[in-house]
Amino acid sequence: MTGKKNMNISDLKKILKVFLTLQWAKELPRQGFIAMGFKRNEADSVAAHSFSTALLAYFLAKQLKKEGIKINADKVLKMGLVHDIGETIVGDVGTFVKGMAGGVFKNIEEEGVKALVSGLDSREEIMELVEEYNDRKSLEARVVKAADNLDALAQAKGVPGAKDALKYFKEVYHITKFDWHKKAVDLILSGEVEPAREWQKKE
Image 1: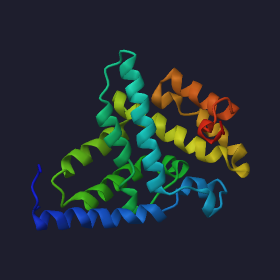
Image 2 (image 1 turned 90 degrees about the vertical axis):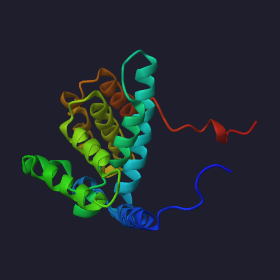
Image 3 (image 1 turned 90 degrees about the horizontal axis):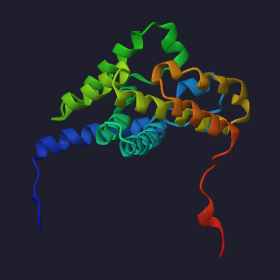
């Protein structure tokens, strides 16, 4: 058997404290959807959004790496997982409101991250990932932003009342600057790509 059987209990308590706090994110609806007129059961939670955004960002990064682009896919995965964890403390604020506030919420969310992870040894890494994502300058951050946008689109597409809001998802290319991001939006909106159901077919 490899690995230690015991763990520093003080550090374990700090980890569990953050973990239990993150449970709140499972019940925290994404306010941008509520502002669009979604019912509560139509808007996903911050936790669900972070999970699917992180996985999509990782898949995209691995594909870019396969095509010869220098990108840190593991960093992308971690960034996707933590990009919204500050909202566990400060709450979720919709994109439109953030725009009205002129960037004020960026600092508030980063303070929320600090408050959440202050007791962890990995706090500096997490803070750096969140700050890099918010700056939107690195390739990794832009890939996570594209995944963030595509995840929101996939959620919105299934809600009839969100039809008028779908145009928003074509207005973020100036941030990511990826041609494939625009193509992905078109593929999702057109229905050309749908969830995999091959496994449901009977032989």
